[in-house]
Amino acid sequence: MQRLAKLIYPAQCLTCDEMIEVTRGLCPTCWSNTPFIVDHPCEACGRPLIGDAQEGDLCDDCCAHPRAWDRGRAAMLYAGNGRSIVLRFKHGDRTDLAYSAGQWLANAAAPLITPDTVVAPVPLHWVRILRRRYNQAALLAARVAKLHDRPYIPDLLKRSSATRTLDGMTAEQRRDTVAGAIRITVKRADNIKGKRVLLIDDVMTTGATLTQCAEVCLAAGAKGVDVAVLARVDRDT
Image 1 (cartoon, rainbow, N blue to C red):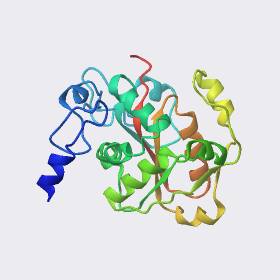
Image 2: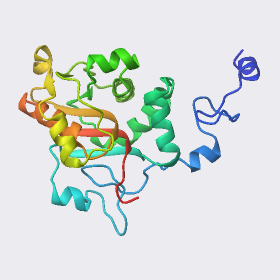
Image 3: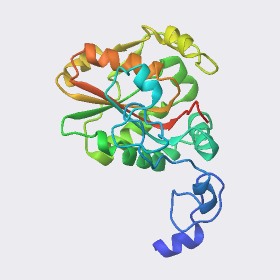
Image 4: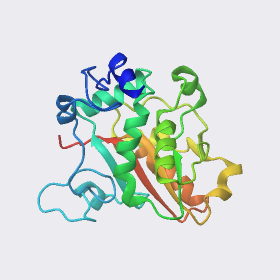
């Protein structure tokens, strides 16, 4: 039956519809155009490091401006087919991409997982969820939690106000825009006391939103916070 199904419904590339051998995958061309991060990344933000980088090294930005969280990873850069995948997933109603993208992210986040890790998404304001009909970060977080068999708390954090889109803003403008916009869900606070929280989002640019989320988690009693994103904007590219 499976062979018959493959003949009737052959597998297609997630981004170009080319016929491929495996389901929910990328064709060789799209795979080569997707900038997966494979070398040693910055330990804090996930940006790929150049030169003779060692595990645990930090990029210049993270050395100059320490993060509110401990460790960070990204599956790919927000460029080329990586950017296309994020935009299709985020704005194109392609929720099916969460399956494979969640697998890539789970692989990238594997070094961050500990026995006391709980997984939570960066929240969207309810108005934006109403418009988009889903929170892409929550879909990724659910997949990562399932693959690593860790507790998943989809409503750990909430946005108390609907902030403007951060696209095109400077780092300082982003910080000011999200300041005070994210809060802990009171009934979930006990679930992270003494635990490590792994925050999941689709894209990291300056890290302003993740900073707010991490600070809220730490203030609520989390032992530590790590972050993992599907794509990382690299300011140097």
